[in-house]
Amino acid sequence: MKSLVCTKPGVFEYQEADMPVLLPGYAILKIQRIGICGTDLHAFEGTQPYFSYPRILGHELAGDLVEMSGSGDFKTGEAITIIPYFNCGHCIACRTGKPNCCASINVCGVHSDGGMAEYFQVPDYALVHGDGLAYDQLAMVEPFAIGAHGIRRSSVAAGEFVLVVGSGPIGLGAMEFARIAGAEVIALDFNEQRLQFCRDVLNIPHVIRAGSDNVMEQLKEITHADMPSVVIDATGNKKAIEKGLDYLAHGGRYTLIGLQKENICFSHPEFHKRETTLMSSRNATRKDFEQVIDAIKRGSINPSSYISHRVSFDKVKDVFGNWLNPASGALKPMIEME
Image (cartoon, rainbow, N blue to C red; front, side):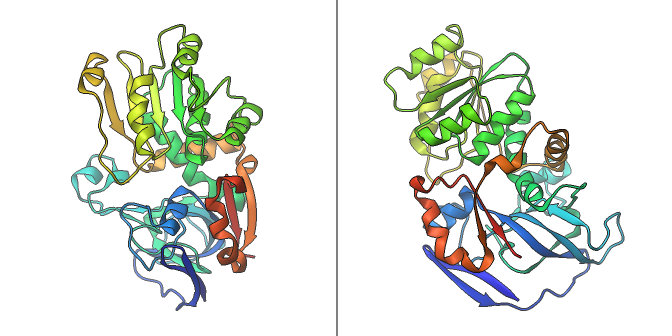
């Protein structure tokens, strides 16, 4: 079968690989769609933490179930997606219902090879019923689940002002689920094209361009001088993360979904006087995946509006590097296997 391997930063190679042989406790999928996210782009450019080369990328997957070793309630031929964070099942995180931050976590496409191949073998516990969704929708469940998890972790409540810094796919997903939770959402980003998407497609009521001289004044005006009670970073940018604390209300929660490689530094007095709750939000759980699927079925979110580019698998090598350029307008490229 054909696979696409990132052999080193900036280099892809198509390679022939052996067909997976079914192992006990596993299932084999025929891949149909692969969504591209910031993790894939950062891996390609060499800036992704927890990463080594060569690596087959791809963790936002939709496919057909070809074969599985257990019985379960899945059927061959069923369209499915997966939870791509493979966990050990016995560490303290797994034992306490947080497999998304397993001490020995193995994220496919990051720690081990992912789904940029014709067929892919995964642990059967990672399977998620497609529940009638189309391939495009199923490949979008995972990035939405990350945003949903961040909102659930932040305990967002109706009527709160929630500032989401960064309007890439993860940030947009966080905005969607903050809206569903009843919050009043504020988007902050440098990219005017992304902010226009927030206005026109997601109907975000408050949009601020980062770098403006009066960001603080705009936030005070929107929040009636209170400032946002929840700030979520979805940039993975060190400067943005460190600046985000300034935007937080006293008594507020600051949640970092974005990830970068370096140490971060805050003013302790600014952090302390707010009695800030600082937390990270890593990956997502099955509960988040189920929430996303339900939201798609109810029409609360529309995954198709996010897809900015479509490309066949045999053309990915030629165009992938272009998506690193903000001018490309790459919001959610989607790879089609057929």
